[in-house]
Image (cartoon, rainbow, N blue to C red; front, side, top):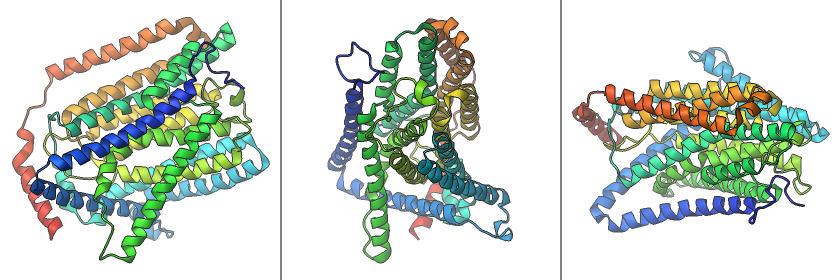
Length: 498
């Protein structure tokens, strides 16, 4: 049976192409990372290499300590009101979200057993939102208390006072810039996909036209962002691949933790964990968004959105896909993947080298969590609430813009400035989508050309504005506070070696 969302003139199966690109990209990233570190190890002087290994081991140990502190803070929930002092708000919200999690799990199990599609969809949305909200609250409490949890006040004093105005063009920084561009395109794809879906539905309802243009644009977005829209057969392949990867991550973490706890005098070396951070940051959204998309797809089966779903969104309605099994596995895999990956990418609080593109962990935590809320908003909220969904996306992206301006999560001022421009472009696109998707007539009257022009003009105006502000107002260059920073770093290193 052919996929009704594929163009009739296609010479190649887009689902096969997307699947091959997905796995080839992951393979290329893994091989490229391994080759880079092997080559660098061969060409680096042995003494320098030894010092790098010592520094890496120290940094990874700090990462593991932060990760352990995060998990400890996540699970340590006081029951008595007096024990919650002075963090009454955090502890109360945590218990509210935990109760919502438990209730949504019970309702989801009952809904799957009784085949109540709409109830299953609402409970899935409630569970995912409650999980993200709970983890955000616990992480915020962790960052408030982390000086007391890690006993490393001088280290965080260095991080809070470090700031660079410029960065160099090292291989590491080029990779970081590439990750930033991909992250921007991934976030931008959510409102763009929503706009394409609205255009597809508008053409079908009013013009009774084909969806070749929408399919082509969706295919290109899937290639660039690694957010693939697949039919049932290819969805199953990617689904089991992701479940297996997350299962292997949990297994490896459990084995290493258990072994090192039983044999503390001969632990397993974990310096290689540092090399997984760029991979985790790059694949963070593709992995978790795939699971969110799976939950959205499965929860739509049997609801009103199942019939009017646009191309690619309903990709798992097949007899081979058992909804209760796949939805339960999706929820479990997302819970484990989200908690582990988010804690991992937000636990690396290394003191950066001058000119290096690096981020404060609390900034990474907020922006990653906001990115996940954006994906949940666009994928799990029903099409009948499209306008509300668009308004929520505006609130989420606006909070990301304000946070980036106020907190300056990157140690390099230039990166913060142009990252704000990227978030503003996403905000502009979300605003256009909100206005156009309010009424089908507005969307059809504007036309594809008008929409593209509005998006392009807005991006150009923002670019001119940011360039003008950059030229007129420049922060005075102070040499990156080298003397004060070096003194703090020296004290920190002495403290860690004692």
